[in-house]
Length: 311
Image 1: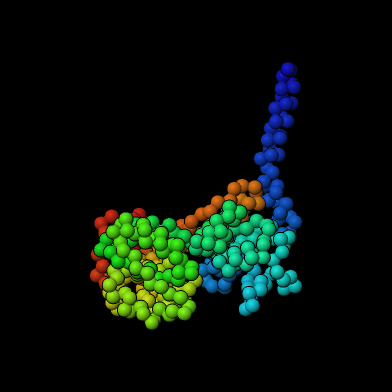
Image 2: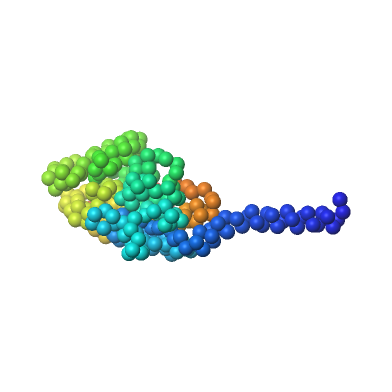
């Protein structure tokens, strides 16, 4: 084999390598060129969802389209003359919140789908591997471990939840809490069972109360009512975003919703470039409310988690 032929063969191999390596990028570019935006289907027009969507849009690097639901539960947005969410309308559908994901599954969306801002998405997707995204599931064992390290005197922990939404999570949290010497007490809230009917009586023997993302226990009025009543009885509350901190929670696991959007945007790009799309948990930090901790005279542990901030 001559040196010229070897050089020629090397050039062919390098050229082919470049073509194959650039193929996902070409696929990505073609999706954008065909003017098929990413459809961002938003369950409700509430601040956490919108902040997450802003994180998607800031990091997506291709056209996108916001879709909302009207009072009848029908989607609308972007093009007032185009109703519905057909499989050829978007290159990828992003479901923001549970209502959006339920809608897409119910209407048999056949294209690529990424979810975000959903607690326990497996309850909706039925554990199928077809969907991926970023959930709101801060691992419950991490939460319980952190609570134990921060408030070592907590032995009875009340959990506010609706069994229709979070019974599995409650059972798993109950099991892992027992390993830390913590007894979990259910504070059941349903649409037919308002929390005000029993709350003050149920919390008398509790050492702390924790909120988890639950669509039945989501209103600002309920959150503020619970935190206020708990403080009056000397009981700290534990929340999962900045609103809980500002409302008087002693400890909050704060999820950065824009960062959730950034991670979702990365998952969308992975799909369009032919890469694997994973199921991810959100980044979070732990924020202590110094004013409330001092007011309730709470004892903190000696070895606080590294993610703790005082505010």
